[in-house]
Image: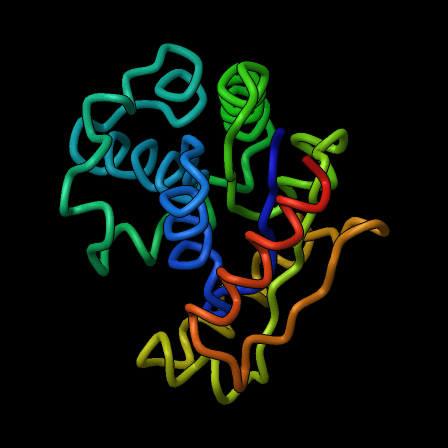
Length: 181
């Protein structure tokens, strides 16, 4: 079974997806980290974004703490908007998800990357909550830049996390996984 979690920055996608995967024993895919790794590869090595994505050179930076640096934050949207980068990343994501039993989070994961997911989730929160969670209005600015790529799957379960604890969201999603298994 594949569970996809999408939504705007600061809605809780990464935290919820990681904890859900741990709770139900599934593999976890953080697509945003993949794009950040390509961006870091470009910034540090001067690599062409499309070539770095296609060749897998970005894998050298998986798990690197610099993935969350301000420099990567500032550049990741621009790198991710390149069609050739998105194509290469989506291919890698589809390969990972094709194995099954995974929780994947990221923009367009349920609508474009893996539309056959058995459970698609759209997490959201009020803009002021998302900005507070991210510690900046940068998340809202990033949403505006990335909105061209963001699509809500029609069959997605929508969850407003504004007033819910992470544990409450994870518990609800684990219940949905159990129902659909």
